[in-house]
Length: 429
Ligand SMILES: *Cc1c(COP(=O)(O)O)cnc(C)c1O
Image 1 (spheres, helix red, strand yellow):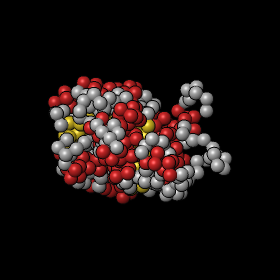
Image 2: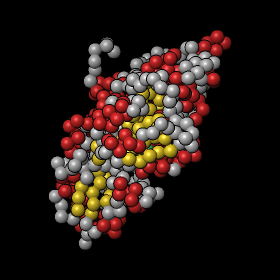
Image 3: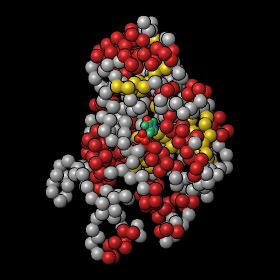
Image 4: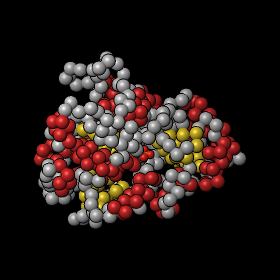
């Protein structure tokens, strides 16, 4: 492609890909191979020393996965990206070079349920910890940062829906304390929000969701903006200090804006092994080709359904940020001007029991622990994804016992509404 700037709709199809040099295959082939033959012994040595970029072994790099990495990095406006086996793997891969025993990350209380568990429980096994803060209170974020803090973490449009983070305000705090801001952009996708433009250092994705878009494969991605100065302090030795496993290479000094990405491949994937397989990359590449079309439709349908629910007597309240009644509606224009995605919650009059009956009465909706599918999905977060949390944590995360979470699909909006209507009649009879 020529160097003239291209629109999102063009890049989602073309970025990172060109016809296969060996066969001319127009679609990116699935390079189903574990290893790549070295030209000779010198070539092998240069690759292992990171003096030359190339393929060695598919735990580290694979040509199909590499196309997806470049595609997502381009759509997010980043310098580089590393794909991995799931969204949760991406979060560990993002934190791994920054953290160490005794170090902490300041995180938003409004997060995907699995992330709350990962951050509050599992990372302790590495000697890491997380401090949970209400990210609407920037002074509280600043107050939570201490000498051992190594990152600030939040979601752009946060699970389980209806909340939009003021990324610019959070990035200003991160900047002022010299820490990287990591933003999980899964729910928004780069079509609706570009966290890097709002000051994020790293963007993580569960590619399992809207990016793949049809509920076929799990995957994750870490995009680096390439803008953070890892050498400005001694807080990030993995990136700024000599790496013994690479003859004393200093990643940041040697690789500049690609330091985090190379470290992710050469150390993160090499030693943690949370690699994306080429089949998964293929499905996700297929999905991304239609991302803009799907997200426009997801947002349009979500708005119609949210408005209908809000006007219905059987509903207590709806938390879709696209609604004027939402306290986060004013952030849509700034953070995600094309729409507030299609994930939100609503409370049914009749509480917990009515929620359970509603879910059991729906026919078109699928009752699953997933989001971002072409299909409309529903879940009662309090009894499933947020089950491991205390009721206080559930409420803080927007997953109170009386609410259900929906991910509105791209079906006909009238059919989605008709299904909710008949199920609500049964649930509130
Ligand atoms: C699903 C999800 C994750 C975890 O991703 P997996 O691919 O399931 O590991 C993380 N963050 C958000 C916002 C998610 O929706």
